[in-house]
Length: 536
Image: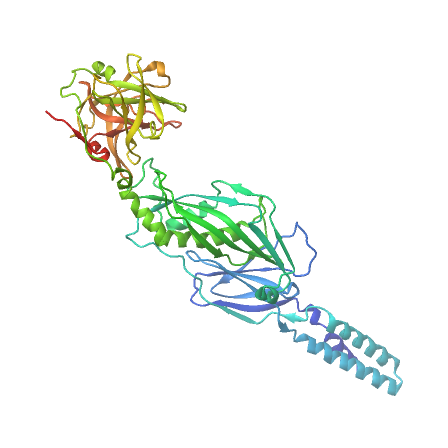
């Protein structure tokens, strides 16, 4: 009889069914890692609580699911694939409850037998067994997890087609106005599936953040999938590279227990270097479920990156985006279509020494600063950089070497090559002699002439050599070690005999970098600005 009571007492063990060892398998997922995190439904909210992922294996693994948590998040991840995280619910009847019922029945039988034989020990033992099993029947976990879960293969990230031009993710911004970030609370999986929320709220303040760090992982994935070229650590861009810009403009957040998912609204466009109008593509993409954790701005970074990455790959393959990217190579036709050929007459003979060219130099000023310019026709035509003179509606102050000040207007420009043609009303000016036929030779002596730092330093000469011929995207540049300073932009790069061979455009200024300047050659000048130069 003692053994009978002991067996009935041991039946009350369903509350100790704390875990279910479930087999989790992913179809065709040899490289898919499997992890899980208990979500602990019903616990009082504790901001210090953090549900942690526990690694279980790859492809097929035995996962100890916590029955008392009632919900578990099974995370499936693989390189080159979008993650899929599934919420599973303890929905199977706890089979140990049958043992509790059997134990309770046995305890009752013991009490009946004891009362018939007037055995107090049997009655008392039967009572405690009955009571223990009765309590166990009503204790959690009443339901446990399934013994096996099978999931479909993860969706691979798209791979770039070979003929697509390489892109460069410029930046990703937050531009969430008040009310554009909403969140909803759900109690059960069934409530979420039916859209039956128990609470809803929306942001009351704008969230604006430029150049977020979300693009760090996006760039890594774009490189991995062939959309973006690996970093070469070069100062110059590959030809045909285009820039993609994105921003987050809307976010809907769903919270269920300790899990969160996002529906993100994003906008994407090609970063046009000339400010011309391009298409803006708006996309709505969901994330999968993630363990609820927030950063400084109240967002879950993993969930946000998940939703944004899906949108980024869609944008990189969107035909409207690609059309704008391909149009960059023909963008100059948009501002050159109405140009008639303009005939100009530079000096036909070299002055013989570079010092004689100072009268061919000018300083160009506006309210933002100053640059330099080169006279290329006696009737007031001046060549400079587009970043020196870029506004056709603005009047620029042009100062000649003798101090005469004239009004100048931007007439023609080419933003890609950073060239601009300014006109002043004047005659009898001294133009440069120009070499528009040949690229200067490597090692050739050259002089930079311009107005460095201050307008009082007009027509300053510095000496160096041609250091190289470089390709920067669509541009071919003259590399030189000649000393170049702010204000030299748009100035002359000339041979010792005074012949103009280039227009100074930029200098790389960084710690430990010396003697690294660039100039635009003149070999494409006629084509780029629609000019015809008189020749001997």
